[in-house]
Amino acid sequence: MSPIHEGLFAPALRKLEKWGPLSEKDCAAIQAISFTTKHIGVGPYIVRQHDPVESVCIIISGLAFSSKTVGDGDRQIVALHLPGDFLNLEHAMLPTADYSIQMQTAGTVALVSASTLRELAFGHAAIANAMWLDTIVDGSILREWTANVGRRDARTRIAHLLCEFAVRLHPAGLTAGNSFEMPMTQEQLADAAGLTPVHVNRTMRDLRQDGLISTHRRTITIHDWQGLTTEGDFDAAYLHPIAPQGSSCFQAVGYMHSPERLPAVVTA
Amino acid sequence: MSPIHEGLFAPALRKLEKWGPLSEKDCAAIQAISFTTKHIGVGPYIVRQHDPVESVCIIISGLAFSSKTVGDGDRQIVALHLPGDFLNLEHAMLPTADYSIQMQTAGTVALVSASTLRELAFGHAAIANAMWLDTIVDGSILREWTANVGRRDARTRIAHLLCEFAVRLHPAGLTAGNSFEMPMTQEQLADAAGLTPVHVNRTMRDLRQDGLISTHRRTITIHDWQGLTTEGDFDAAYLHPIAPQGSSCFQAVGYMHSPERLPAVVTA
DNA sequence: CGAACTTTTGACAAGCATCAACACGTGTGG
DNA sequence: CCACACGTGTTGATGCTTGTCAAAAGTTCG
Image (cartoon, rainbow over all chains, first blue to last red; front, side, top):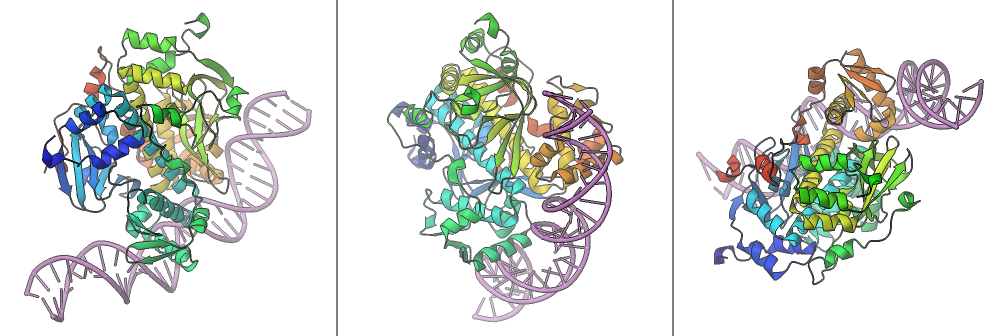
């Protein structure tokens, strides 16, 4: 562990540990892996749809987003990534990208080769555990986004996304009181919500006029959290908030999933 | 392995083996796990959104789908499950369902306790490997569905879903030439596409009139595959078609992800 | 054979997209 | 330091895609 790398993985370690405490051996293994870091600006693709991918990226600082491009050139944003997040953990296992990744704000990412990550995972159950869980929670968020664009009207979609941003940015220390810096432009918000930028703008104006939020430059202030969650049909359960940390590798898993009860319909 | 259970896991074993060959030891471990089977009809919930879940389900026969319900009662279908598929592999790790599962056609599911599945995965790297990959591919399909409902018009959405059905049903032996039994009613297709049943009906009529497909009862025949994929902006890459099988546990993984090349933008 | 579900069609309404123009903030080069 | 270009946000006018409501025909199953 060279000094130059020291602490770079701190956010990622914190993230992985949320899913279950890691032993000293696990932590040491993580800190021993070889990786490179790269400062990346806004614009260029970190991963590009249809391209082969050999590295898994972890955000050290900055924000990033994933998107898919459809036939007519329109874009759907399918994920927002915060510091400490894996950008493309699936590419530890898959060779080809089915989506693209770009930075939303300039920042630094760490690159780990897919094979290194696979060795790490398959040599350390607690790490595999954490990575699998990370993949699973990303899937849950994706289901919510699918329902959001598929079955909610514009106002509800935008309110919902704003609620998700607030909840996810908070533990990352990216909120101040009821305010946070918008992690997207209105055009990107449109691409995340499946709307046009113009309609996003009008919708946010309505939310403003109804006193739910206010905006100043790129800063959003939520004045009525209760109201916004109602408008946005928002229930944070799909974010699968983290279990408190325990001391043994699998304690957290045990906490998250205490056995011996079947869903009524199946047992009936 | 009691005779009554013999072969019940065959579809699931095939599925897992697609992701990488399993050793005899792995196979034996799978066949040794305790599970129950249950015949389930159309209608009742197998897993219900917001409920605690203790079992992972695997379809032995029949079709199933996952859906989320939003505030106003509308429903978004977020996944279609074929025989051999896990219905809710994430519940090996998560205690609470963020979506619901129902059978689309009556069939049989196998139930395995989440803890049993976790033990299986964490005791057998190749199995963990396969399960993680399964989770990952489900995520890829979900991203495509998100883009589908978010950024494609009605005609394209429906054509895309029909293409996906054709491609996924084929290896399951559920197609006959260019025809297959529709795995959904038009109402469900609407819930998958983020449209109304009425509009789905009109859209399918248009596809029929344009000679792309024809329908007879619940049977769909595709007359112009090339045309339908074009109309549907369909590229099967997101289904991450399976690597050919090798002989050692990780050979297939190696095949899927051959290292030592970084995406251009990152290396530049 | 009848009830319940599914598919189909029509008439009409509404939400969101499109096109166009302008305002605002920021960074850059003359 | 100002002028200018560029990205982003804002608003208006208009129209199309899709939703809503309603009713009837076809299909499935007890």
